[in-house]
Length: 306
Image (cartoon, rainbow, N blue to C red; front, side, top):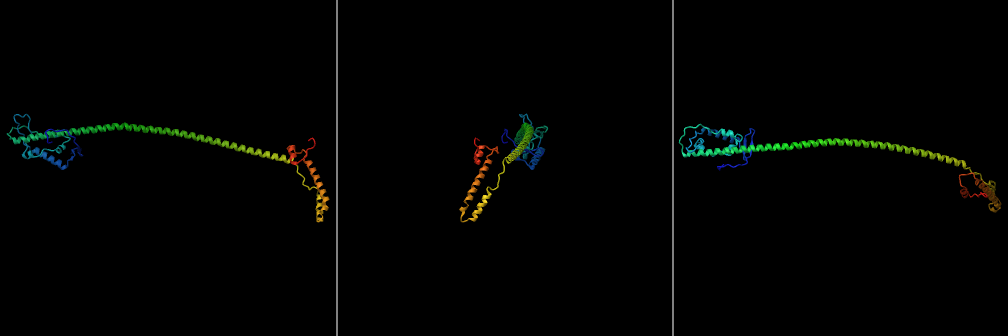
């Protein structure tokens, strides 16, 4: 603001609920400051005198001459321009425009504040135009960023939705496949259960038949053996001689040799009975045994030429 030329700068701004700029270059304007600026600008416009006639060499109309108090006041700051951030044309239209009047003679001291005021207005317009341009560019960039974000987010959302649909369809297909596989496994288990039950029943029936056949064969063999084996006689051999020997020993306890004849007769009787029993046993009454084996067991003597 101190130089005659204005340079481009980045301006930060903020708006209130009425969309008026209240923060400019990091400075927030309060309500009192805004109202005071409005009041001062309105009073200055009311108290401004009519502009003096320009010198002969000038072709433009000079701004109205300011009062001594107005000439000595400092130039309007950038915060004053912030209250008109969205209305540059409105600010320009509010500049005092008065009809030309007959020129009056002015001194050099009254002409200098007018030139300074014109310079301030010119720089104010430049600053306001720059602020307006910065605001428009910033709004445009924000719209472009929002549009780009929307464009980039829509395909992602669509792709995410498509992926969810594909995963859902794949999950349904996998569930159908798993259900079919489970049904196949259950059918195979039922088939194996039926097969094992049949095999177990067949084995049980076979075991029962084998047990029945073995029991029948055992009873038949026992019956045949009972029919072929004759009962042996259990009567005592030479019972008369045995009783005589016992009586002789009882009577002759001190002279037992007197019973020797009876003992010899008893031995001869026993040997004769054994021979007769062996002859009967060696007869071929049991045909299921081998002859040699029978002779070996019983000690039978084979008949001559037999």
